[in-house]
Length: 334
Image 1: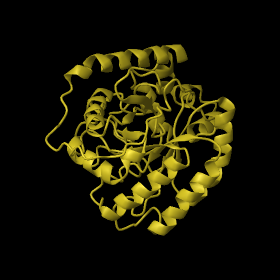
Image 2: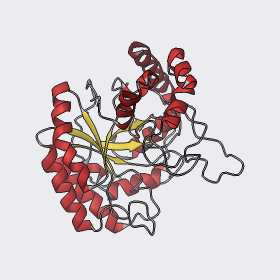
Image 3: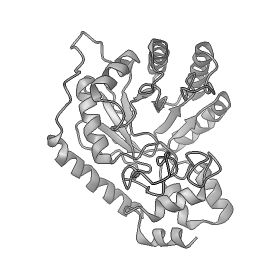
């Protein structure tokens, strides 16, 4: 199964590379070529092994229920999300296990103030609290180095402004100075133009980061995400980017009659290309599973949880053309 997955991923990457020449960069809002001091690129994913955790929610559910059909999800490397101060307590153990595997740990920092741009005011209660949180993250992660996807949706969000940009830039600079590999989130290809995103990312400190992430928790195709990422990278001094392929195997869900939230636990979804660091030259650092496959989007689409859902996991496996038929059949039988 692993050999087949790696072969499929390699073919997908080759296809992306062959299509790269068809991408025409969006230059309508090209940032001025001002004297920006770009941090040196270290390309942490190049030749790296990605950390595989045996303690994901899917893996725990699999062990408790003897669910062999979950192997296409649980045997693959996935990002670990840090969404509260309590999550930072897990970091030393995560770092030790990743170092024991001689693997690169991928983390997601997700505690920016007013995280959802809503009246709930979730995330950190203040910029000062967030500064302390970043300091604790740095402390708990030492001496390991990780790839940190920085605050999904924070930069493209409607509530983005100078205060958020300054807080992100300060945090990126601190993490980079501590030796961590930072990837600022850029949203997805159907959200903002590359010109606008380039301007926002520069305000948020992408020049101090290794690069940016694309398609986190979304379902835009890998091909579209790749072309959009290439355009954005061209506007940002050739910063490296990563693509979340955890559930984009069928592309974005179509509009469904009677559902205004068709993006939320849609029926139309599947596992995308498996995670890989074997990518061609040209800006793409890795395909990653950043959103944990099987995690519910919320109370919608027949779900009543924000946690791992075997129903969502079955759908992702059964509908994916990249999963071996035997596992697809097992998922459908359960």
